Image 1: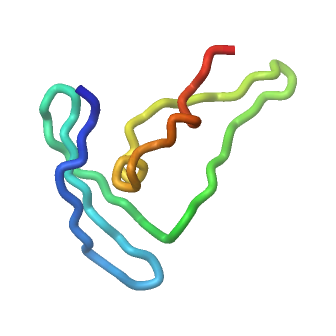
Image 2: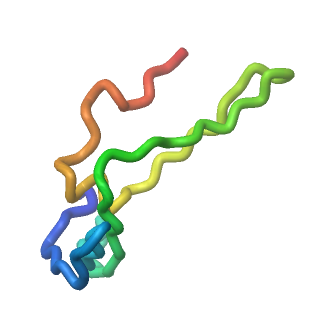
Length: 79
């Protein structure tokens, strides 16, 4: 069972919005994460040009789940 979003509460709204999300992990354990929402964001991809490789990390992220989940085009494909 994947991580599931159970509840989102807005705790501050101004220039940015701060929310607290309650999620349930694969084992059924509930946990809370903060979401700072300030519109679309960018990401950094660590890349080593000598070894020609990038660091890829796959973590369930509360803001991504809250926003509807990652598009299928973001999923890692074997090289």
